[in-house]
Image (cartoon, rainbow over all chains, first blue to last red; front, side, top):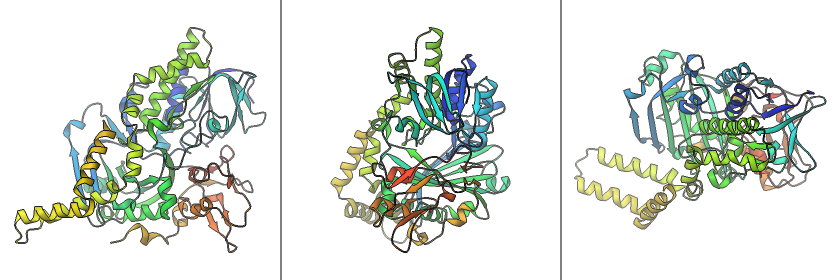
Length: 434
Length: 101
């Protein structure tokens, strides 16, 4: 396919692959990036929130021309029962800063822009090319890839697997196991288009300001999962996701769940009159630290979703993807400079460097949370219901005295989840959070 | 109040209609292993697949039509460790082409 040998081949043109390819190309390495989609972004799905910090470390002046939608000035955390939401909103003028911290983005557009920067830095990009397997030498060191193009072999000193959550290439080569249904979430999402002014008046926004809503509660029908609603310039991204194992056992269709969320009385008016232009689905690796595969070996490294780099508790993924891509690339650049081979012993520096960043520190901190939430589904259904009932009891002025109302609230909680159950929940959550 | 269960009968086709696909005619990227009785995993796919690609035919066997596939990989995860389905990415350039993602 291509006769010349590359310093590095990057599989995939999402955030982690682009971060890796950009970092290596900018330092003068000969980089080939392979993407199976028609264009970078055409196979990629995210909510999507961009965390500026991770991108700034790669392209400091990205704000000048990256396709950003709105910077987030308000975060709403909702607990929904069938009729209500209880929640916490945080909105601050401080988020209207010169260099905002979080933006909503539309991935197909953002990924195209990021890919343009990668090519401008000197990397070669081949789209419409699916990698089918890794090529190894007699000793098992990865020396290149085979693609579905004619004569599809290409060789390189190192292969960066940035192939996303499904990670077929890595699995088929025995580098990582297949994901388990209880370590991945399935999210479905729609793009709802509305005039800019309508979005701004509905969400109390001006200019480029944006709002993010994250929701848990009866919308997931007892399954472990969350809903989200993000404001873009002229559209709203709305979606909902639950663990694949829960979907399997529940008999509920993801699109039925999405319809339920869209039609919740607190959500429906926000979408009224919108034109839907796309329906997407995507897996999110949510197994955390304990589900992480080995991320380096002889001639290969794994970055981004393929390595389970997602902090499900804080809804962070693309920043972990970009950071792992950048740090893997920096390791490879360093080895090139010192003329050391990309073998396992040397690529171990990638993991060592990651240990010092928020990526592995956060994943370790929350290592027990995925199984905790998986085994305590009442956090997603019972508590939101009880919160709503409690709020209503206190807010309704009906001649009943407040002591009686407080007793009624406590008795409701005890009836549904015994005092010891609640104490146990608080204790278990604190222990998993620590 | 409407709940997810109330929408269980809704059809997903109207959603997929919004999307852009380049279908690789005659080359489905997912195949179901021929069977007489479907496994629990295969049956689950008839409701879990977010694109509704899996359907039970009138003989009770589960069939797949990949034209509307969103390439999420859910069926692959559910059938992991079995040989119920054979899952590949579409040929380079084919399949779903997300406009927004």
